[in-house]
Length: 223
Image 1 (cartoon, helix red, strand yellow):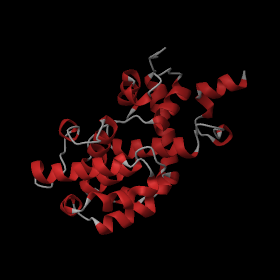
Image 2 (cartoon, rainbow, N blue to C red):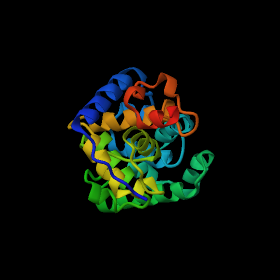
Image 3 (cartoon, rainbow, N blue to C red):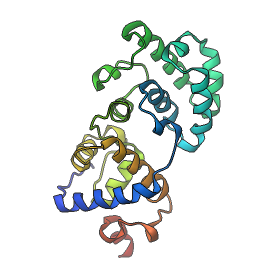
Image 4 (cartoon, helix red, strand yellow):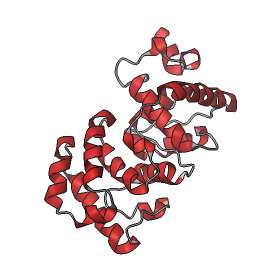
């Protein structure tokens, strides 16, 4: 059952403030976070699909050295790209990334679209990826939902989302409501890292969680 609970503005404000303070000290450093180059961010988003970021980092740097532009990637043989991305698994991502590069060269003169609607036309680009590119490459205020973000929201605010979190309209609604009015790209990254480092799927670190004072999940565990 999907349940959406109205959130008080006070609780949202407190949640934002606490996490942004945490993020200043604990946000992880990855090479794709040090750029606003849209192609580099698109490539990273493909590699990060269903893969832990620390596993992607060394391969990403090798990939970008070899294919520094959309045109370079589009002109490369597919098998070469497949072999480079093979350590990450999910071989279909190499095919979709290659096809996207070819489409970008053919239809967009090698430029990465700056709207969610246009990005969704690319093979392998879904709502999450499109919005991440808009936020991180173009500074747009696009909140996102992945398993980490959904887990934090469900635990802290008491939501009950659908089985497939990325398709749950109520969780997307919550993401929009909870996101700050600016710097949403930084906000998204803060949530990702907090979910990966503190509010983990198994054995969450509630003892050192700065949200424990008002967390619905922790209150249930104490009962």
